[in-house]
Amino acid sequence: YSKGMNPPKQKGTKFENELLAHLQQVWPDADRAKTNNPSNDFAGIPFPVEAKHRKTWQIPAWCRALVNVSSDGRWALVAAAGDRRKADAQPTVMVLPLDFGMELLEAKYGLRSD
Image (cartoon, rainbow, N blue to C red; front, side, top):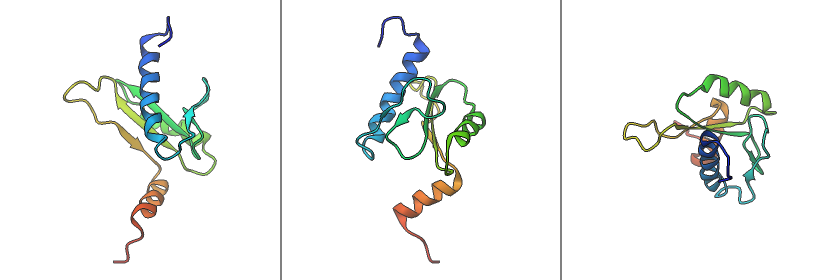
């Protein structure tokens, strides 16, 4: 980490790098976006992805910000608990718009014809 970087910023940077490693399994050229890129922490991905590593989650506000930067209704929010070391910590979650989530499920599992 950079000297003088504040601890919350360090925690966020570490989480973004962890998430980036996952995203690069799908998009090898993905990278962290430039600083101050509103509601999109990554470049080289076809939709905005926001990473949040916080004690207190503000999912509605974070989702609204992503809606505002998404041109086609596709976006993802990844949220992690403030202290993931605790036994009772929330799991890291991904939040997607329903239509986008269904699109991804259909691509992976196909359409059911019950």
